[in-house]
Length: 401
Picture (spheres, rainbow, N blue to C red):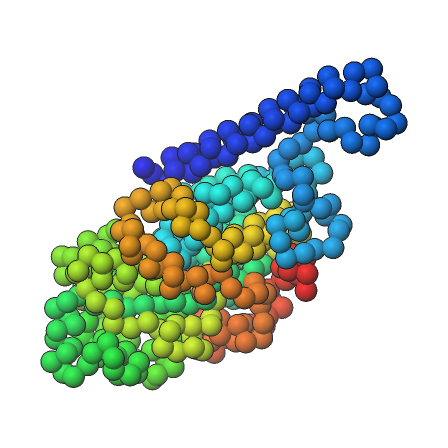
C-alpha cells in the first residue's frame, strides 16, 4: 500500500469516528428534548442543554479557548472557533524514529487538535523534505532541524518552531565487514574513535547528502579528527533499498537511525550493530535530529495552525510514554506492517527516551549542537545565531513556559 492510500485509510477511519460522535450527540439531544417536553425552555434546563448539532465538532469539547492558560495535557489544545485548519504536510516517510508523527496519524491526534493534514509525497531525505516547504508546496515539515541552517544561510525563509527527537544515529555493518574488522582487532566493543577510524576504506549507505543522518555522522568524524575522504558514502534514500543493498553486500554497512535499517539488518541476520553514535557520545546524542520547520511568513499568517501542530506532537509524545501494546500495534498495522514484530517493539523500547521525553524548546546547548553539526557539514564555522533560526512562541504556549 502506498503512503497516500495508507493516509486515506487513516483519514477514512477518523471520519467514521467523527460521524459516530455527531450521531451520538444528535441522539442524546433528541432524548433530552423528549424527556423535557414542554418544559424544555424553562430556566431550570436552559443551562444544561446540548449544543445544536450544527455547531463545529472538529475538536474535543474538553479543549479550552485559545486565550486560556496553556497546560501540559491535550486539554491545552487550541480550540478552533469555527472549523479545523488544513496544513500541507511534508515528512520523510515512516520508520520508528518518526513515531511521534505516525502515532498522531493513527490515533487521530491531529484531528483532535483541529488539524486536517494534506500529506505531500514522502521523501526519505531531510533536506529535500524542507525544500517542499521552501518551494511553497507545503506549510510545515517534520524533518531534521539542521537543514534549516543551510536554508537560512542561503537567505531562504525557514524557521524551526519545535524540537522533537534526539540523535540516535547507528552504523550497522554486514557480517563479512564485521569479520574483516575483527581480524584487525576492531569489534563493536572497541572505543568509538577507533571504530569510526576503522570505517576507512568501507562503502556505507546513508539517506543522502544534506540529510540529518549524514550531518550527525560527519559531526562525529569531525569531533574525533577522522577524515571522510577514505570512506565511500553512498546515498540510498529508501530504507527498503538500503536493506537490499546490505543483503547483496553492495555496501559494507548502513548509517541510519536507531530502530531503522540497522535494527532490521540485525533482525534479518544480514548484519551487526557496530556503532550507536548517540548512545556512545552523549553530547552528540543530545543534538536534535527531528523537529518542525516552517517559514516565518507562514508562521506570521497562521500562528494558530502552527500551535495546533506543536500541540499534537506534545500530545503524541505524552501518549507514547504511556502507550499500551495495543496502542502501538495500531501504529504498526498502519505504517510498519512488514517490520518484524519483535524488532518493532525492541526499537520502540530503545527510542522512547529519545523521541518522547524532554522539552521541545530550543536551548543554548541544543542550538550549539546543531550549529556544530551544520559547521562540520559545510567544512567551516557558521556564524548563525539562535534568533535567526528559532521561534519558540508555539512551544511556549503549549508547554506553558
